[in-house]
Amino acid sequence: MKNLFYIHSHLTYYVTKAIIKKFKLKNDEIVLVTSRNYKHKEIGSYTVLDVTTIHDHLDSFNIYNFYKKHKYINQIDELLNNLFSQEIKFRAYLPHVFHPVMQIIATHNLCEEVHIIEEGVNAYSKYLMHKKDKSLIKKMVKSTINALSFIGKNRIFYVKNFDLTRFAKNTPPIFYSITSKGFQGLSYHVERIKMLPSNHIDYDISGSSVLVLEGAVEQGNMKLSTMLNGIRRILEDINAGSIYIKFHPAQSKANCVKIENLIKQHKIKTEVIPNEIAFEEIILTNSGLKVYGFTTSLLFYASEYGCDVFSYEDYLRSDLLFKKFREKNNFDLKGLLNG
Image (tube, rainbow, N blue to C red; front, side, top):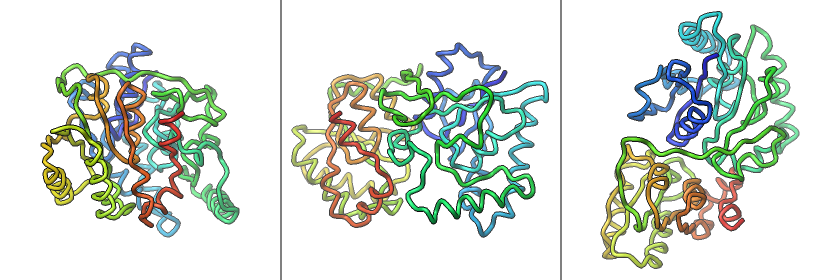
């Protein structure tokens, strides 16, 4: 049986590496399906299927253009059929089953098993640890649409991230987490695995201070002024002449420049960690790091892997955009760090 891993971020890649190591999988037993234009220098030795274009098209899928879904179902099916002969089945390792692309993979006729790999904050969101919707009306609308969707052999549904009811297989699913706190509350078996460092990256910043940022401003979840004020508060507490900055890929160049200039105004030298170097890699290969930030799950991972972590989320709470975002995403970073 082949093993299909869905990778769209550094974290999903590092979880995939750990699973490959655990089961001693050979390269010819592995297929990596990628999206969000994900790249990593190590994946070239595997069979890679990039579905970024289809993924992005299906991001805009809704009840008003549902008739377009069959086109993309057929495209994914054709790609998978070209990879696997009818005699070869595969097990799928997916970040969740919320996105249509992952649902299409999970319902493919050659897919024998479905397992879930950790991808970030969703593994710690209490709202996603059960199948219930907050709103009865929302639940009724979803149920009605899902019922009507059976027309025309549909395989795309409105479900929560980890509700595998419609994707059940003979083999029970396993949820893979890199911490002891992932997926707590779900009725599935959860297995902890440890991330493994890459073989060809040497970036030694042991003992340094690192500011880890997120794309909240660009994603409409926070005002830029709020983030800058939060960074000012961090800078008041940092007792260091220099700091490394890990920007989020979604952050705009203009905003990155403003952040760097703000730090330099405090007479602190800055060095930007290159985008191609994953922060996960840094916490795996460095020691004595002091990590500062706001709400990114990378702070929790840094804490789990031995770094001193300082979250300044409380200084963002006056921002109405951020407050609305936190109401939807109930990732309790403070509770995880103090638990």
